[in-house]
Image (cartoon, rainbow, N blue to C red; front, side):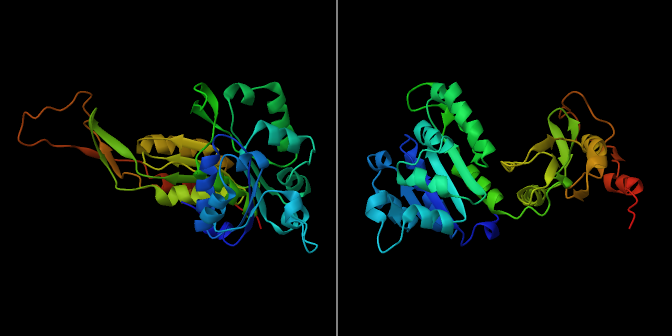
Length: 325
């Protein structure tokens, strides 16, 4: 899920270099179009040999720029104009070559020229390559330079690579790239604030294979965690069992199962929080006569004895800080 308010109508440059994962950049351009981004695409010369600019233009419904000299006309200089007018620059995939160029100030093609002239804060780079290339000291040194220069590096995934090797270097999910793009464009008015959020249900076991629970998807808590993270807050999300993939930018996720476990984690972290949001559906009761073995179907009826779980919110209320005005 995306908070489209941060990205809609923003001017975004998608730079594409000639990694084998270039076909995933076509999907990224499609997703950016659907998010109503004002998109411009810049291809390196080698990337044109892999996928035609026509494909990117059609899928992204946008202009595609490739050669610096062919684009200069009527006083409109592409690298200065695009870098000045755009809100964000995303380079995906980024090869070792384009990374080295940008890190060391080389500007011998349109994409590296734009990167050198780009001064906005929203700069995202997605390195993808063979794992031995990615782990090389030179590449890591260049990535460190770019981080210090304000670039957001979206780390590649570990898995099977096109060369047949297994390791770190795979192009990540486009949803991850879009999330980092939204994060980079959002206002950071919650910076230095610490936020504690609970989400999802708690589950109380009857025996090793059965339980009682409250129905809760956890979506509210997860989206709150995403929104606060986008705005610069340091978010700790304490979550019961859900089927939701947590936000990629979330730094602190604590998984719990029962109400007691959730209470323990809340009490462990509440003192550090400036804001606490309790959106979890905590079970009011737990099983008093829990069986450590599966209950067999021997009797027509069984009786479950319940006892109250702690009221986490009530206990927090007793501990809340006094605020001096």
